Image (cartoon, rainbow, N blue to C red; front, side, top):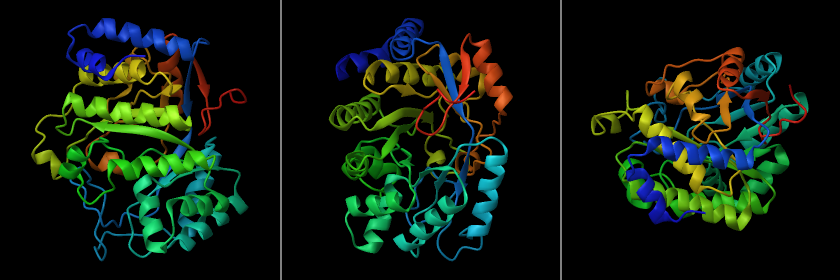
Length: 343
């Protein structure tokens, strides 16, 4: 286990290849079977109406906007049916923080889905759960428990951005604090609900901010063991207000360095995902030798990052070929990173 000071030194080191080799060594420690995984799922954004106005987001619309929407059940059902027909095992469903959707709306939706489809629901970010708890006037724990009982299977790590309040105040001052984000995931883990962890970097934060983010994740994982994976990606600046101040998008070298250091630092999180959505397939492939063991989703639908400028696409065969060409065995997984029963 390396210290925060050592992680900061690695971010400043010119030895990118040496860092990558150490990350690859740590990847092999967790995954000695030479398997790299992927998932077939779909992002369903049930609403784009949001009250937070984050400076890095090009997706949200304020209440009353002509482009604002809330998908009816029939639209969501159709999207799920298309996902299942394509071999999908789950949906990642998130939206804006809609001021008029109480917990009963989500409970009814999740129960309706589960009564119709054998599909895993990887749904609702920490900010959404906090928002629903606030609207309903109940605790975070009770909110998660009710949503779990209605059909929520696991919780994505979205809304983390950089887990340092100095950064959060600058880029998303209305969004939840670092401690609130951690509290949602802690309560979920205590209730037996697994979650993922994420980091969106490249927003003008310092190296120290990034390492602080990794450290609070490592500490919570030490406490609960509830994170299934860590997924870092770089900020996409197009069409965002923050993009006016962050003049250059993160480079591929920065991505590989951040990925590798994350794998080295987060010794207690088994899975680390290398992203193709923001960096493309070639960089994602290299990331499999910089600590990544998973390439994410075929992603039949994606609306948030794409509106901020990401334009990459990939089929299942694209991902399988990329994995094979990197020297790994491709395996489809489910939301909880189980690959043993899949192809």
